[in-house]
Image (cartoon, rainbow, N blue to C red; front, side, top):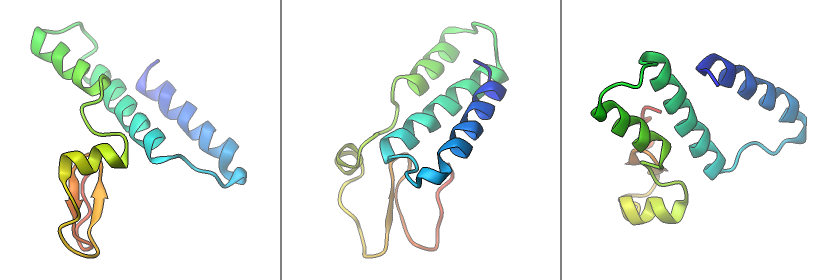
Length: 101
């Protein structure tokens, strides 16, 4: 599946499920992020590539970041201050700072 195909599929998924009011779980959100990272990495360099490129793609695909709150807390530790938000990918961030996604 190309990045474009996945983006269209994802758009259709959200359009079809918006009336259900469910949205994605945190685990599903992380899975979508990883898949987007993977398909966009393939779009940038669609060749098999050298060993370091294949390691990068495998790390993206094979869960480089935590996917549950429990795993994120184990990796990033407890909340440092009140009001901080936990990003599974980037750790804790203050309310006035949004991590990149």
